[in-house]
Image (tube, rainbow, N blue to C red; front, side, top):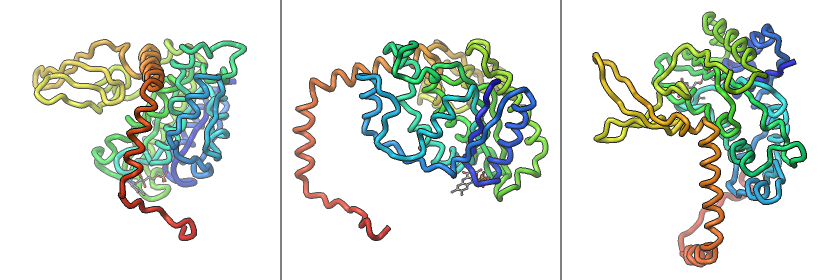
Length: 318
Ligand SMILES: Cc1cc2nc3c(=O)[nH]c(=O)nc-3n(C[C@H](O)[C@H](O)[C@H](O)COP(=O)(O)O)c2cc1C
């Protein structure tokens, strides 16, 4: 039986959870086994950037080694176990709540399936959990209090941070505003129905090959790969870059409407080839660092001798 995992980042029985429950019931109606994680039950500490996880993994094939002792391994186990995941997160300050971004950082580079496959870890006798490599799809739900969409502008798009390292295909997404107080979302019946459909769409795309998974969102978006509208515009040029995918395209106006012709879709961060290429870049920079490590240590030592006062919290005062 296909497994769909729902992860809510909001309050218990708050808006994100309530609408996610609709999506999960939709997934169940399409034949999936469902499970709900409330991230507020989990202590997930931020990545400290020590890089122990990536170095040990690349050198020795040791996985899931993190200096942080917290509930991340429990979450990770359920994520690896599922065939599809639905993330439902409140929008805080126009982007997903910080706990979502903390989780995304922790998934980060050491779940980079492109790099791991390239390093030869995709094989039966590998020390790396092979569930990482299964084709998986996702749905996103972003929930905000705002009535105007410009207060939720990066809500859905930044949720790609949690899926692209693992090469999870996003097949549907939904943004719901005007849901500030806990439970207010229940007044948006159409959105609840749409969430139920999102759950069905996600379940229908689970357990099929990645190439056969289909986008079921309500709009195509500017970017043909991530279906997002978050673009950067190069000053003085007619070129735009998708902030999520990194692909570039030429911007033209026709009949008063904007159009972007993108090039090199395989260069998208969401494409396995780009994941592999990026991993090669990182790998090369880590190897090159060995040659300059001593020189850099000496340079850093000069900073350690500076008399800039450092303010540290008193542990007792917490
Ligand atoms: C610190 C904070 C920042 C917020 N920023 C935004 C925002 O930028 N845009 C928005 O639409 N709603 C914003 N909200 C409202 C929440 O997204 C809204 O209350 C949401 O329903 C919370 O989800 P929950 O009920 O699942 O916890 C903010 C709420 C808080 C507490």
